[in-house]
Length: 194
Image (cartoon, rainbow, N blue to C red):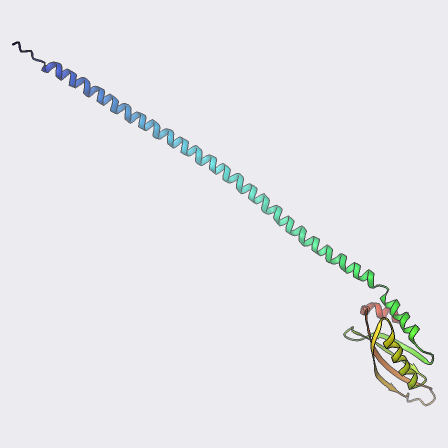
């Protein structure tokens, strides 16, 4: 048999395999590095995009917070205006009460009773009436009539006394009565002056 030495051929074949392996290894490292760089660029772009979205959301949140503050301010202003309107309506509804009350006093005052002063009490719940009467019976009749009045109730006699001056006829009295629709202090005092 013939012997052929194939060692150099194998050596060259091994060297070719080594070169291809090194080349593939370098190529794999380069491709991996390129993929890593591409991934880093993509992640940076995603972070920038998310930051931009977050900035837009913060701007929108700030705008909405400003709108909510304005809405709360408008609600407070609206409530204040409603309260003012209700106060004006209440004053409008009660502006004639003092006149009606004085009319009640004049209609219910019997002959022989003369009123000097009509004013609200300190607490504003009652009306104090002072005057002169020809007799105690007339004051009693006046108390009964005041108790039957549509706007007046619970009349109470505070005092009834004869004047120190013997020349004057009659008795001085003071009574208080509750008004069912009590006028304001200012309105009653204005009406009493007229």
